[in-house]
Amino acid sequence: MTRILLLGGTSEASAMARLLAQAGIRAQFSYAGRTAAPVAQPLPTRIGGFGGIDGLAQHLRQGGFTHLIDATHPFAAQISGNAVRAADMAGVPLLVLQRPAWQAGEGDDWTHIADITQAAQALPPQRAHVFLAIGKQNLTAFAGLPHRFLLRLVDRPDSLPLPDARVVIARGPFTVADDTRLMRDHGITHLVAKNAGGTGAEAKLTAARDLGLRVIMIDRPAMPERHVVQRPELAMAWLHQTAPRGV
Ligand code: 3Y8
Ligand code: NAP
Image 1 (cartoon, helix red, strand yellow):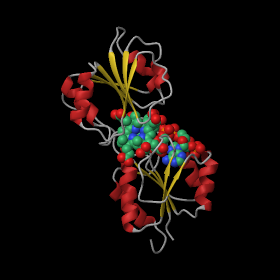
Image 2 (cartoon, helix red, strand yellow):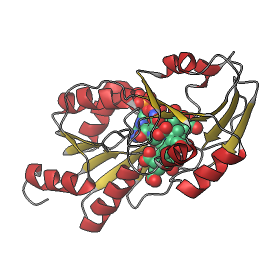
Image 3 (cartoon, helix red, strand yellow):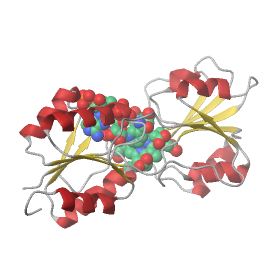
Image 4 (tube, helix red, strand yellow):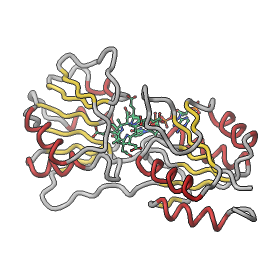
């Protein structure tokens, strides 16, 4: 009997959860527990880490899961690496559901960097107004710089490692009009973004192009070879191809 463990935390994972619920396929949705009140899902949901690779492998075995779908974020490298190893240990097929990376288009002014630690060097030496749309987990890379920062976070932080920072509390998906207004109101000169792909965070890139701003684009971390699809419908097709009798 099919039972899916769906690792979530992205728009694609939420779309996948709706398809599984509509199809009446037994599944459990999993959040890391990064935010105070994650969006409710139409599936039974667990929140919190598994306790590393062994913990995830044990959860797969004990829960009688027949498939693992990793629909986490392209920058959630730790859980995605764990999923490859744990699925193999538990003898459960793994599918990655991940949106394609963004590509610079006409009129874009992007500087690509390999990881967040290079972002500080990619900023100008003189004081700039920088929109850090990268969440709160990597802010120390910008401490000690002369810039004024605008942060957009899901939950209000207790403290920040940046002396001159303004915080906007907002949960995507975002719109071009709102992001254009936000960046114009704050006199933003530079945008730092992760190459998340998808539509939930794309508006700021369109706004940056319209405003003629430089974008410092953090490329995705390298990941081991996996079976990846880019749309939830393709993940459903994979399930039917790999399901034991009677999906
Ligand atoms: C906890 C679940 C859905 C999912 C929505 C997507 C879209 C909005 C865009 C900006 C960029 C950022 C951040 C972002 C986006 C979607 C998607 C996406 C970026 C929630 C969610 C969880 C998280 C975790 C959170 C991180 C942070 C990253 C904010 C829920 C809302 C910046 C990534 O405070 C923290 O510790 C936040 C941590 C990981 C990155 C970071 O390093 O700080 N996401 N985001 C998931 C869990 O617990 O398992 O709370 O409802 C999900 C979404 N965030 O169903 O529509 O699909 O990408 N999330 C980035 O892409 O750069 C915001 O502001 O422009
Ligand atoms: P990460 O660094 O890859 O994972 C760190 C640890 O968090 C993992 O080892 C695991 O703990 C736990 N974890 C992560 N995702 C989980 C999930 N879906 N269910 C259960 N445990 C999970 O992950 P992250 O970058 O902090 O992202 C955390 C969550 O936020 C992910 O679900 C991701 O989809 C979502 N998200 C992340 C970003 C981003 O920019 N990173 C953006 C949007 C959404 P154990 O080792 O104990 O199992």
